[in-house]
Length: 533
Image (cartoon, rainbow, N blue to C red):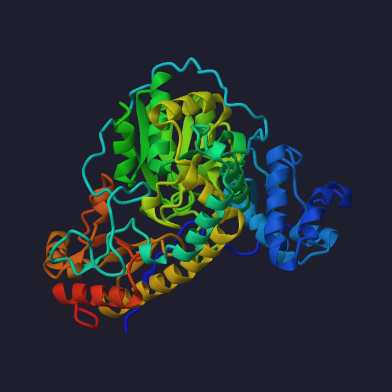
C-alpha cells in the first residue's frame, strides 16, 4: 500500500526550546503567573498560557523583557518543565514571544494592549483619506463559493442536494449537518421560552443581547485568546454580514480597496464588492502574506485567515503576524480576521487569534456555521473602539438587530456547556474522517502529497502529474459522479508542473462515503490500487 505524503505545514509541532542562558528575574517577578499554577491539573497548561499572554498584552511584561529559561521558570513556579516549554512554544507561534534555540526568549513588540470594559458604543469617525490604488486591482468573481464565508448549501453525509449525477461531493465549506445537537438545542429553547421576560422581545440592542455578548466574550477569550470586551462585541449573521458591515464603514471613511489573500476565499472579494470596494490579490508564501507586495499594494484594509489559512491550511508564522500588524499601524489601516474554523485542531495546539495582539487594529469575526450549522446565521465580530459606533449604527439601519430568541438560545447553550460539548463531538468525528481520507488517498492515489491536515475541515491534495493532466482528471472525476474543487479556483497561480492540486472537503462525508468517493475517483482516472509507473 502506498503512503500519502504529508507536506510540511507552518505551525505543526515544534522542538523543545530551552533557553539556559536567560537570567532569572527572581520569583517575585513571576508572581503574576502563580494563580495559573493553582488551576486543576488538566487546565494548568492552558491557564499558564492565558496568564502569560495577558501579562504581555497588558504591558506587565514589556516588549524586550527577557524570560527565564524553561527550567528556571518551571522551578520557580513548581511545575514541570514541559508545561513551561509548551507555553513558550505556543506564545512564540502566536507572536507574543520571540526567541532562538540557545539564545533566549523575549517578549516581542507585536502585542498592543486592549481596552476591556470601557463600555459605550461610540467612536467618532476618523478622517480616513482616500485609499491608494497601487497594485493590481481585480474583482474576485470566478470560482466557487466555498470557503470561510461560503454561501452555498450542502448535503448530508453522502451526496449533493440539487446536483443530478453527483454521487460524492468533496467540495469544501460544509460541515456535517446531521451533527447538529437537536435535543440539546430544543432543551435550551424550552428553558429560554420559560424564563424570557416579555420586555426582552422588544427591539434589541443592535450589538446583540447582553447575555449572549457576555457568554461569547468569555468563550472566545478562553478558546481563542482574543481581547473580548462584551461592549465591543456585535452579534451578526455570520462572517458574511461582518464583512459587509466593515466594508460599508471603511468605504464611508474614504477607503476604496481591500486586500485579499491569494489564494483565498472568493467570497471575501464578493462581499466587499457589494459595499462598493474593489479587491487586490495579495500573494502568500509558506509563512503568510508577503510583506513586500502588501506594502506596495496601497491598500489600508485586508482580510486574512492567519490561524488556518484558507485554502492552503498553513498557520501564519509569528514573524508574518507581527509584520502585518506593523503594516496596519504604519498605514493607519485595519485587518479583518476571519476565524472560520479556529476550534478544529487535530495534530497541533490551536494558534491563538491575531486579534489578541492588537485589538485596536484587528476586527475579529467568527460564527457557528462550522460548529453548529450555516443555516443558523449566527456570528459575531469584535470591533476596535474607533470603528464601533459606525459599525453599530450600520447594523441598526441594516436589520434593527439580530433575532432575540435565537440569541437567547445560543447564550443558554454556551453558558451551560453545550457549545463546548458540541465542539468536542465534532472534533472527534472530523478527525476520524480526515484519517479516512488520508488512508483512502494513500491506497488509491499513491504518491499524492497532502497538506493542511493538522486542522480544519479540508486538505490540499497534490496528485502526481501521471494521473493528469488536470483538465482531463477533473473531467473524468465529474463523469464518475465525484465533485471536486481545484486549487486554482481560489487564486491567480497556475503552476505548469502538471500536478493536480485539489481542495478536498471531508467534514460532511462519512468515512464510508470518503472511501467510496476516492475509489470512484481512482477508477475514473485509471489509477488502480497500486503504484503507477
